[in-house]
Length: 235
Image 1: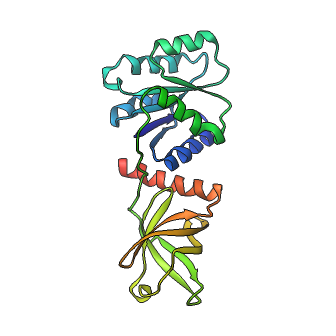
Image 2 (image 1 turned 90 degrees about the vertical axis):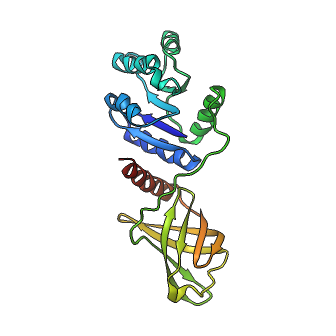
Image 3 (image 1 turned 180 degrees about the horizontal axis):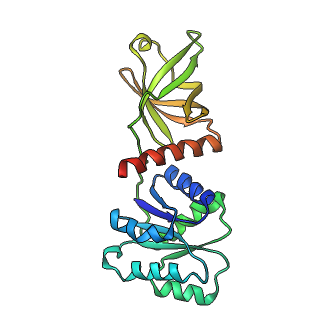
């Protein structure tokens, strides 16, 4: 399920991307409100989370166009707003808004509030599938193997917000890495990200595992990396 996001705050946009991608949604964020309609024309969306000011006539016009255009009939719009008046609620409901998320934005309870709204709108998916990127070029996983007392290097071939798939090189393929890899790391841009991996499956020299012991900061870095790769693929 794909979600469009518009918010004037870069920090909030990045937080929404991280939260929703980790939950299993596909996300496309728009920086300029004037690009909302054109993005709707390029890709299908089920949900849109859009920041709206109480007296933002331009945004009201955009939302009205979404409501009146049959092409966007299946899009459920959720408005992100601060201190709305009763008149604002009435106006937004009249042009098809499905729900409201009130500011200030709170990372901790956002997903619960979001799920309540889409459940009421009848669009909460029964099952979600995480974005998986595989256009990774020479992306290495490094970890220490206590059993053989050496540093091992795997090649990451797939990554999602919650885990990865990697292969071991032929010269290290015979080494049994175990069910849990501690003190693993990989580099994204100039950042070294440390974590543990819970191995879920092994097929030949391929391993599938989920992230453990991942800090909030590092989790956001991974989500941003995956999002950027996902957007590249959409272009």
